[in-house]
Length: 268
Ligand SMILES: [Zn+2]
Image (cartoon, rainbow, N blue to C red; front, side, top):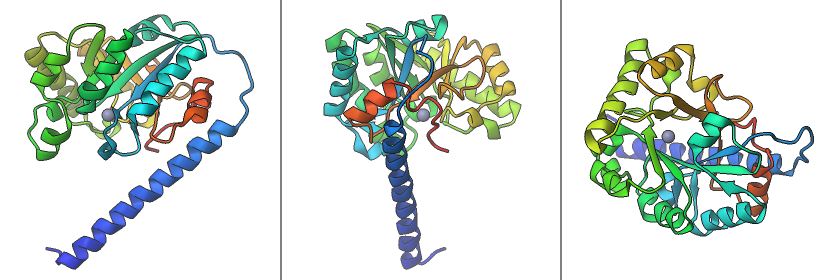
């Protein structure tokens, strides 16, 4: 058992690490956004990946309410059209098409994202971590949507998919553990929301978080669309997405739409 003082030091080291990672990410985003883009014109649509909006406790992936609305406005001003993620995943989409996906089912998905996308009539997708939506822990009860809240959210142009049971790094799991994460989350959604999900977003989503075994087992579990990050590095056969972070001001977001982060993977 650590003494109180030692615990405080460890907590402070942890916070400093988080701060350093966040600072590094801010610098990376700003730097990559400044590099002029050259090369062939894009031929397909882009799937954006958000986490929370106006829920800063969630960390570097939280986008403020004002900025989220602004990003939608910027996209429209630039001539983009919003379509469903499934449309882009299955057809490739057109270069002027964008889709909105949201991971983890933070409470702000219902409180802030849903009202905005619904007011604008935009389709969107939400990926649920079934073990978190079970509300078994204090932190999930505080910050994550439970099944009845998800049920209230259903309808309209919302697609709900699985994001596993416990948000693990799939590359570190045995085949049995992979199957459990894929199947128990699928069955949890079926039991609590009344439909069998056909899409799955890989937790963390980096190329390093997925492999051929997981891919095959995901297909066998009935998932026909598997979302990853990023455009140039996504595991073959997955639908790549572009993560939007807390640091993405107007300039960085425009660069993002222009491909500045197509090789960038968060959580590295
Ligand atoms: Zn996630």
